[in-house]
Length: 356
Image 1 (tube, helix red, strand yellow):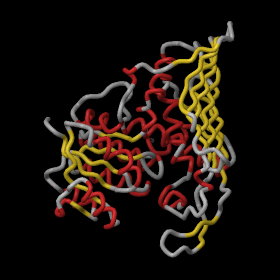
Image 2 (image 1 turned 135 degrees about the vertical axis):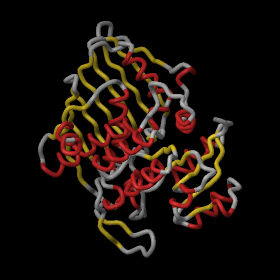
Image 3 (image 1 turned 45 degrees about the horizontal axis):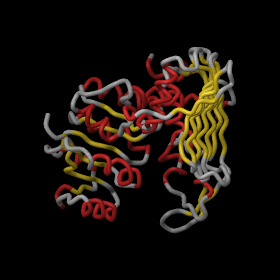
Image 4 (image 1 turned 30 degrees about the vertical axis):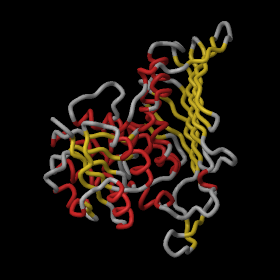
């Protein structure tokens, strides 16, 4: 295959800020069509990337039907992820979809099966897999740096829910997003734990909403927020490792903090990413000496390149395929059920209801 001819569906901040700039750096990819229901976004992106007027669509079905497209990238709100991706798969088009895969495990499972049956490549944007520091932590854990694992603590906290005047965008609407920080931020953090070779066994979670009302984007009318601002998950992994995941967008004075702490028989490994930068520390269990670690250049990667490589039949142990997103969706569904029913929920319970 020569250049992969790409259609971009959804032209919001993540598409223009991450996806499209990544594709523009690749010699084996060509952006040939775009789609968005917002005509102002369609014009702005179309003009920026010199997309012909007849390749600017407001209906994703028309873009997918275009014969000059090999693959589509879907960066819409969550409620239409699976609908659009399934249409692409049934048309024989490879696809990349933003996380989480969908609104629940049932539709994500159906999409994964459709992609498999249609023999198309299916990619999920679990973008933390493509950070060099995250990849290096995976390498360190997998190579036995901390030995047998005991505890994993993951935090993803920020103050974005407290921005003055932030409106009732789709992320705060359960009918469009299914959940708040749990799906938006938690999908990444759940995947990181799985990225290290761990699988979730059960989840006990709680979530809540601090900012309960926001102005709508169009009229400014004050309406109820129906998704979670924060979520705490206490999990047991299949290896019996204890795992805690903390999520919030109401952490006062914290623009962005992601941290992974891994405790094992040989010591403690901590990755921190905040406004001051990134670092990895290892503290030896016996000597208590602290070692600062920096990822070698070989751990540098790019999400957009990984998708195009996958379309061309190239993948590695880091590639995030739809099956990885499906596993994350099962954990998200278990966490939601746990919050609603105030009990631990096993991953097997979620899967068996759909796969039986």
